Amino acid sequence: MRKTLHTTLLTALLSAAVLAAPLFAQNQEKKQILAAYYPNWGQYSGFKAEDIPYHLVTHILYAFYKTNPNGDLFNADPTDEANLRALIDSCRANNVTIFLSIGGADQSDGFSELARKPETRKNFVDNMIKLADSHGFDGFDIDWEYPHEAPGADPEKTFPGAPGVDPVYGNDDADTRWAELFFLDLRKGLDEYNKRTGKHVLLTAAVPGSDYWARWTTDASYKALDLLMVMSYDFMGTWEKRVKCNASTKQGWEIVKYYESRGIPKERLVQGLAFYGKSFNERKDPRTGKALPLQLGGEFDGTGSGSGGTHYWSKLLDQLKIAKYEVTFDEDLGCEYAVGNQEIIVFNGTKSMQHTVRSVRERADEGYPGVMYWDMLGDAGVPDSLSLLIAVHNELYQTHASKKGRM
Image 1 (cartoon, rainbow, N blue to C red):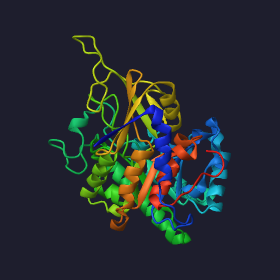
Image 2 (image 1 turned 30 degrees about the horizontal axis):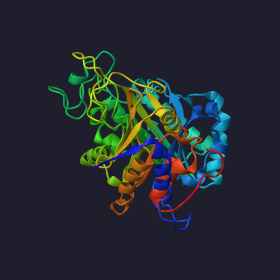
Image 3 (image 1 turned 90 degrees about the vertical axis):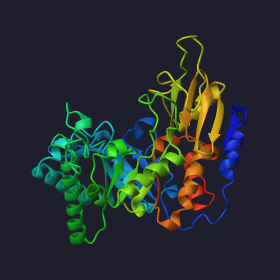
């Protein structure tokens, strides 16, 4: 079933969707996780540790530290270290769990080489333990995007299960075997540290929302983790031939079920949410020169408006105001899209966020632990009535909260 909202009604209807959450006690026990990634470039947009509404989240993952082939660990932006310290202090004061996320989409180049040598794996573990002591992190999140084949190798002849290669580890050009040793060493190192100190520092990883990338990582690697932060987004990009949701309820559960099929307990699978959308330009029919229909399943021609075709939620709201868009919520899939200005934007607004989070909340008794989102900057400056974080929080906990301070 599809519901169409015209932009003249957009603000009012989205506001009503947020305010419709049942009103219960605001201090209701938070049984499920609501984790948020906070990127270290937040300082440049004026969104610092003091601006975070800590009462709305249970976990914050600071992104990112990075590594190198020696297994050293350092802040990807050293100028943000003071802000990180303030973030840690604020998490402590507000009873929020604080993790350090290591890697990231553009900063994972050190993992492959360090994972192949026991001495560099040990150095990584030792440096992680030093950070647990010096900074007091409650956990470490490995964001290796992604274990795959060595440079120059043919991926289709390399991955585990490819014709003629090892069904578990692939061939020698695959990162798979070394990634498993890396995760097992991390697990062992943290277990020994926790036993020695009496702490309970956790090990998590941001894991792909695609079975194509997940096939390079063994079940044993995933089972070494306390939680898997499932990146159930970025399903849409220029690699696709036709437009589809960037993230949706349907896609999210499909990838979660994939991990379950590999023996990962559902209690460890945290479903991801995207606080951003993606835009794609209309395509002309090469025979007639006329624009082809902009719709889910339709053809497109490269990225549209935004930064590289991407809009944070806060910027997307501005975009919808400056041009005439027709906004549709696809209730069957659980995503939204906007058509106008010779482009289509696929995104998740308050309606589809509530749709997805409701499905997670309703399965809490089955053991599903909650949700996480990338990233906190997407909701910065958005009023309560249109805030994705407010919508997610109030749906997950069935309460009616508001932001404190500036967002």
